[in-house]
Image (spheres, rainbow, N blue to C red):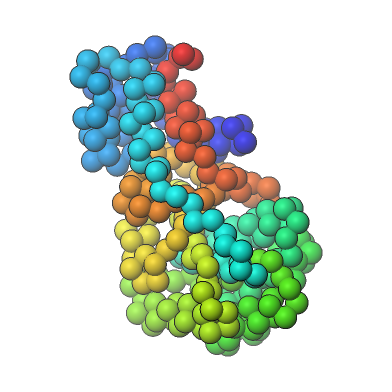
Length: 291
């Protein structure tokens, strides 16, 4: 696991090392500030980190980690015992939503769960086909319809089928919508309402997919989705393709939501559970000697 997150943060740690080529036992606060900004940790958070460090000019990895951990205190909303457990997956086009759904389904299946997918992104025929291909590859059943059909109806049929056939998990895709498209926002709210009609309490978890290469700019996007339907958890994709890994601090702090997984590659196994300790260690190991 540690190796996966280290691989995923290679580009981020590389830019940090360009500021501090040689690892240090302790680092000056001013230099630390430069390094953290280089990793795309938002400026106001870098200033907070520096403020809460011990008063001396030189600080250790232990000092910095203690402060950094406070940004990831938000609890992961665990799956409840209701069957099926319904995940509704939202996010804009290009964030890696469909691929992430497949990876998540693969995790559930590996854990012995019966999984059903719902292709409620009926806006694009390509989205339906992509999810169907993943379903075939993973040998997981899927409920789908033709392009432009009512996405809420697909969500309803998926949950109803899962209840009838005793599935453990349902994952429902939605159209990759921009937060400023009022009609698409209304559609998303409708899907949530219809899910609850199919099964009281569904969707049990609304997961927002954020593109890691977007850096801190993803925060505004996330806030908008949170205002529309209330997000429960976040998955960061494409972490391996960006030098902006530090933006996760901003996402966690601004949204006060748990980051549950991070995507570090294209294969079905490249979605790993997010561990704040490991994440912070990889970031800080780029600049500090082993203690």
